[in-house]
Amino acid sequence: MARAGHRGQARYVNAVLRRLAGAPPAWPDPERDPVGWATTRGSHPAWIVEDALARLGPQQLVALVEADNARPEVSLRATPGRTTRDELLAELAEAGLAARPSPLSPDCVTLERGDPGALAAVREGRAVVQDAASALIAPAVGASPGDLVADLAAGPGGKAGHLAALGARVLAVERNRRRARLVADTASRLGVADRLHTVVADGRRPPLRPGQADAALVDAPCTNLGSLRRRPEARWRHGPDDVAGLVELQLALVEAAADAVRPGGTVLYSVCTWTTAETEEVVAELLRRRDDLRLDETRQLWPHRNGADGMFLAQLFKVR
Image (cartoon, rainbow, N blue to C red):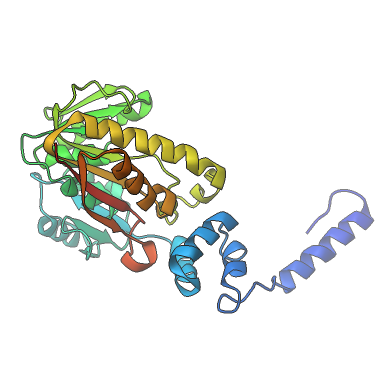
């Protein structure tokens, strides 16, 4: 109840507060007006809603917004060479924690409750907190043990560490010094510092000779619309005017990756978003510019369909 100020002002404020408390706003019906509902009750900016509507239609739009606003469960990924998913499940069960295998990633488990930072497996690097969709990226690079993989936007290091744990030699390029330190910390915690070397540099101009790497990963900066379950503030971080600049950066990074990879090697492009401009259109423009690349496959994941982040993956081969 308001008490400060003039008595008449306090009475007016209290009357308004009582009215608001007794009469909740009449939100648009999601079935009759999905766009109006998504931009009000769903708390999604109009430009995001319009893009999602064009891709998904009204019913799937509502499902996506509901998934974005739901609290996500914790996903843990077993560190290859340190523990298996089944061993991790057994360890969690012994600790009295309910967990189940992820239907999306063979290396991940879903933890129903509990603080992951308090788990011995996480503290010791035998497991990491990683969304199941993100856990698909390092294996999709297709690197063999001993291969040199360039990660050209490596911070904070989850995917670079995963690649190194799978046996690759990783050059992790990150231009932000703080994020580069996080990559190095990840390598130390996972026990892969001997296979993961971090450099502070611009991924558009990596310290590599042309054709030096066997494979490259570009997990590029993006609008992050696929991670709104975990980062709800991301919906307000970018606007439609930011997309063109992000696309320019994404293309520059993946072209640098293509230059760094030898003929016969792979380039994996990924973003945690689903805008057409940052996914299919980036790949189409890349193939228009580069006749030395061949597209193998693309995959778009969705929070409301896959119960994971909305990751986009495109695997390309360097043909010559």
